[in-house]
Amino acid sequence: MGRAPCCDKASVKRGPWSPEEDEQLRSYVQSHGIGGNWIALPQKAGLNRCGKSCRLRWLNYLRPDIKHGGYTEQEDHIICSLYNSIGSRWSIIASKLPGRTDNDVKNYWNTKLKKKAMGAVQPRAAASAPSQCTSSAMAPVLSPASSSVTSSSGDACFAAAATTTTTMYPPPTTPPQQQFIRFDAPPAAAAAASPTDLAPVPPPATVTADGDGGWASDALSLDDVFLGELTAGEPLFPYAELFSGFTGAAPDSKATLELSACYFPNMAEMWAASDHAYAKPQGLCNTLT
DNA sequence: AATCCTTCCAACCGCACGACG
DNA sequence: TCGTCGTGCGGTTGGAAGGAT
Image 1 (spheres, helix red, strand yellow):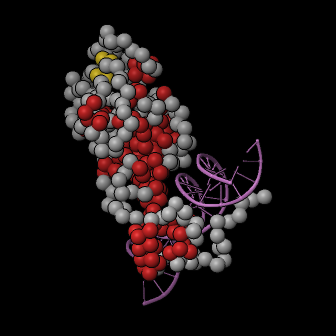
Image 2 (cartoon, rainbow, N blue to C red):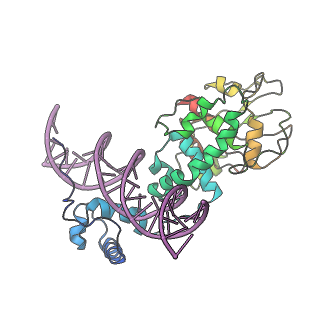
Image 3 (cartoon, rainbow, N blue to C red):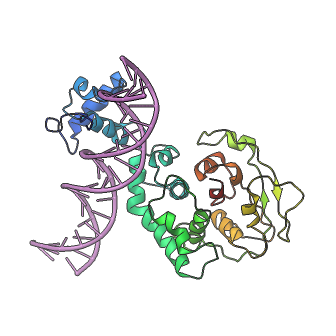
């Protein structure tokens, strides 16, 4: 036995909202609030609409502070990163973008960003990629991602591909010379001042890789195997190139990158907790999920 | 000018989940 | 514990608008 429909579809108006209906709904919500019951709201507001339709119209269009269009490069970046990390959980992604709705972000992704991302990925997939950056590894980016990301390299490959184009992230002007990567905690103040107003950041360890690809004295604790891939032996992935691409800084021999990746179960939390002016960590967390 | 094609986005649909009785 | 209800969410659709032929 299925559920009863939320309203009688035959008797309520459907389709595009008229300006009069918009004004009716807006004025009602502004003076009475939604009252915790969207189903009952249309009747109270004198609207011949389904409650769900009213809710959607309010949330996606009439609500104050809604922004439409005009996505910034930073917003593109956030959407791509979060999509790659958590998949099509648009409500979560939209929550990181003030003024954006899940529907808006979803539409934006489906109509523009997805193509942009695919354009960024194709050249790298066709080329002889580093061992982890196979086309199959990129697949999670291009197909609807599951809510639980299990790929250990999808983020990295996606980001790597992005650096090969000029559409999303500018490519580095010079190849990396040496990888000297310092893993550091974001400053507590910076984390606290994060515009996304996030959960407190657990105190990460400081891990330093020496120039020979080995690890310095600080003890490693987490799944450091993955971190070790950054510098051990043949580089599996050009992180210095990647991050210089993000920051726009030339990857010099003493490039220091601040990463807060290692303690977050997924990219969303990691991103949210970081407010670095330097490298926004990409593709380092999925092994922990 | 007419037709076809593509893009964009508002709106709909159905499912899942939590609250509640 | 179970059923119902309201809400939230993600996928999909349909039509308007603009571009290409």
